[in-house]
Length: 215
Image (tube, rainbow, N blue to C red; front, side, top):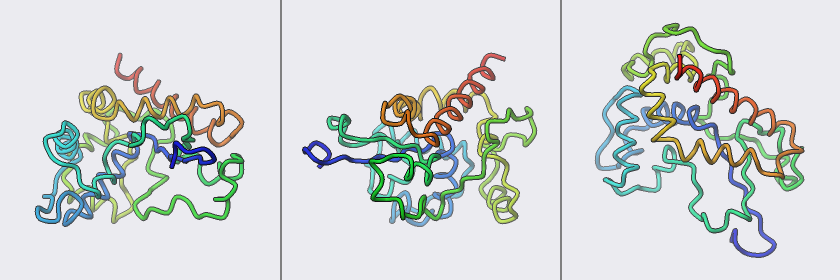
């Protein structure tokens, strides 16, 4: 459909590292089916979860439909990208009023996923090293207890471990980082205030993480 005249496909893209943590939290709560309906996932830390993802993304296991919850956000119809509009999740719902291509969705309630959490971020504010410890190594039971008690550290803290951050940005989620950057360069988004705000926040976050990598 995306390659046909008169059609425009919209691909919503979430900031990669935020999505990485969010999908981990969802997967752990849905362990009975999210990986395989025949082989439930064991409880694991976020760092262990990323190791599990690397096995899947390297092609050692056959992806299943439910794996879209946590696999890369790269569109499947790459050849039709010229007719795909990419929109940052973080710009919704304001972008529905600012992008004329999305006028049909202005009454939609977004985002609607039950595991989407918008507030678990340090919002671009540099974290104190060691403020939360190595959150990535927390057991799932500890993470779950923090969630249930509304005291989960910011998503950014899951990447306080420098080697894990380098692995996520430079390897595991690199395609999604590049996709987000390319999305922000689309001419269609330049008149969208909420889209520019989301892109600016993303670029600032990447810059801060890069600076942290060299300190």
